[in-house]
Image (cartoon, rainbow, N blue to C red; front, top):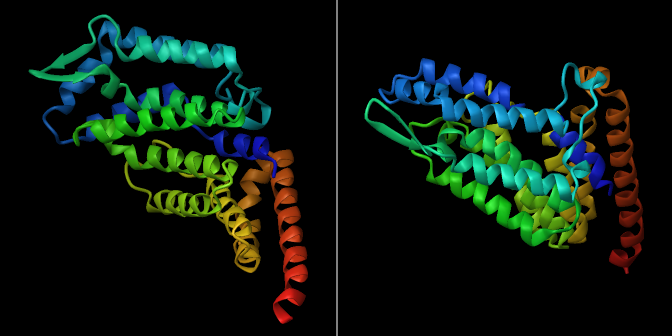
Length: 288
């Protein structure tokens, strides 16, 4: 299986820091919680503004997100983010989580910046985790995902990080399922893929944060199929794969990323063929 191909497909619609910040502002402005106004002011203070600009600058410098239309942009998916770049991102995360004046205050309320800026910090953690996964640094991958999920779980219900937590959990769960597959744990891979798919389809939280993309849903079904193959359940795996063509190349994706859409479809065709061959090989054994 071509994991680099799917790494790019899954990451291609990850939002940029500026997009997340705009969505966070809208959510706080619409919130009826009395603490929301204080959080809005905290997002505008000098220290927070400086941190956010550093995030945007790193994102642009490393070409972590497409600029303009995806079809015409040059960008680096996580599989192309190397060791040196990962070290820079990790150093940035440490400084952004606890900058000088690390408590943001407003209306008598205090929220650590690591939670106030949590959604943006999680974007970088997901890139780090996926990059480590591609290099088979599985222990580091687990640790990064654990830190990400701990941050979400510790967020109070009134803050934006908690509101978008299910969406971020879905991406982390998908990465865990990919890691399980690379560890040859077929059962965990299938279970994790189904958990991620359930989170994606639940669509909890603000819809303008990071809507699930059809390729993310396809990635979940593909991993579930790979897990079934690893467990020797090729007929069920074939059933999963037969549902994928409609997710892989709808008109919008074929227009935006025609080469990637075609490559994904070809990879699924190969997996389907391998399943069919395995079923044909197994059939005489079962009959005997």
